[in-house]
Image (cartoon, rainbow, N blue to C red; front, side, top):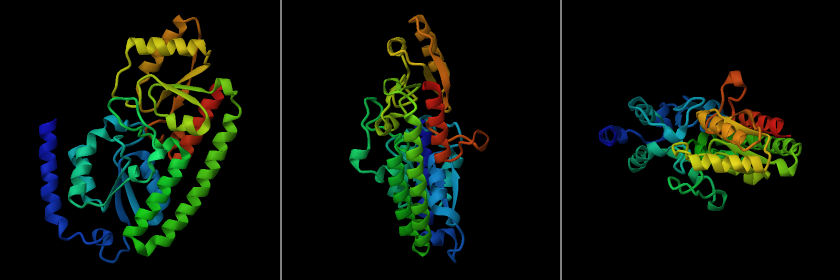
Length: 314
C-alpha cells in the first residue's frame, strides 16, 4: 500500500508541476470569463453540504464520500486523486479525520493547490483533545453547532478571498445560514429538556458525539473510542455493560457508518448484567443520511439525531 501511495503521489507532483504555470486564479481554472461555477471537491458529506449552503450558485461541489461512508478508514482511489487535481479547490475536515489521505493533502499544500481545511477555522480552545492513541484531537467538530457556525464563517471568508466578485453573495448566504444554525441549536436545547438530567447518557459504538455532549449537557460514552478503526476488547464491552446496567440506561444507539455488531454485543452483555437495554435507533455520526432518510443536509441530520435520542431516552 505504501509503495502504491508513493507512486501515486509522485504522479501528483508531475501533473501538478506540469499545469502549475497555467493556474493563476480560481476563475482562470474554472473558466476565462469567471461565469462558470468554481469546481470544488470535498471529502465528507457534511462538508459538501456546507459548501453548497455558502457557495450557492457560484460553486459546483463534488463529494468523495457518500452517505454512510466512514471517513476514518477511507482510502482515496486513483480516480479520487484525479478529481481533486482537476478541481479548483479541495476542502477537507482535517484533525486526522481523513487519516489515510493526509499524505495527499500534504502534497497538495507543497504544490500550491488551493485547499481549505476546517482545522484552520476553529480556535484551539474549541477543539477537544483525545485519549485515543491514534488521534491528537477529536475530529468530530460538526457536532458542536457553534463550531459549525465558525466553519461556515470560515468558508465564506475563504471563498470571498479567492472569488472577490461574488463576495456579497457568500456573505449573504453565510448570514442566512447562521440564523438557521441558531434555530437548530434552539431546537436541540428544547428537545433535550424532555429528558431528565439524570437520564442524559448517550452510549454509541464510537466517541463521535463528545462535542454534542459538551455543548448540550450529555454524558457521552463510546465503545470504540474516537477512531472507528480501533477495536473494542472484551473488557471494554464488559465495563460499559456494567455502566449501562448501573445507570439503568434505557437505550443505546447504532451508527449509520459503523457496523452494528459492537452495539449488539454490548446489548447482550448488558442483559447478562440483569438489565434490559433497547437499541434506541440509528444515529448519523460520520456522514449525513440521504434524501429518503430526510437527513441529507447537516441541519436535517442533526434534527433527526436529536429526535432519535430524545424519543428513546425520555
